[in-house]
Image (cartoon, rainbow, N blue to C red):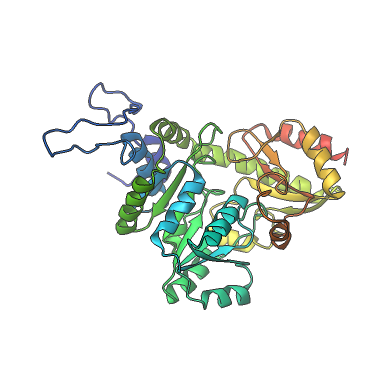
Length: 383
């Protein structure tokens, strides 16, 4: 039998494996505990925090897509980010991007204040700053590409190569692209992080995360820590996420086409100051995008002329797009990072990262392209 594509394997994951009744769709296992077969002899599962068929099926499907040895499903994306830090000691140095997601910045900042880790936030597109940080012998380099919310790309392969020279490991947050568009482990990374809430689930009705390890040893260690700290995902959330993942490639194809059209429209509009989207030839990350991604994705940001007031009018009056945090669902969302997703960052940190009051972020869904463009046209005439 010929090898199946990732798309086919994803659609077929856990389909038709039920031996009890022959159900095509996999059953949902809600039990919190499992019967021991005999005295001092447990079966495959004993307690739901440590293992569950639905959670294991989801982790295996994500790991297979990413090309990893194992996937640990967590209760949220932030839980997955925090989970990877358990592999390191308090005096180990972690390098993180200066323009990362606000929740990631908040977590690392406060963990450092607790003395539970050491962290340096670095512009990973600044070679001198990155080299100086790597010279300090970090144990982990965290990458987020494209960055949230400015869609900046960093060279995963180059950073991984530099990391290996000093014995550091690399984690990549692949939430914005999913394995449908980017495969960090193939580029040299050791771990891939997902907020499964986003593109993997795709329907804005589940909170979850996943940490994929390249090696079986790391997967086993992370599974132990997830069970120990109790951050594992719930069975029903895992069931819904795997169901949503079956349409990942189809959803991404449509959303990406819509985003490309919107980026071109906004790039030419007189009310728009700048557009941040690697799919545009004018974007600084366009060439790198062609090299390490199979597509530009369905997220973009832009700045409006008129500052904060223009952004407020835009967000409060636009149609079709919902003003809400999160991303990656079938519906189109719009947010103001400075007062929404990144409000937990200090003002100075937001300024350094380039997250201004006139910045708007779009998560483009799978609605009709003409309706999305029309909604943008109608609101931009008011700016």
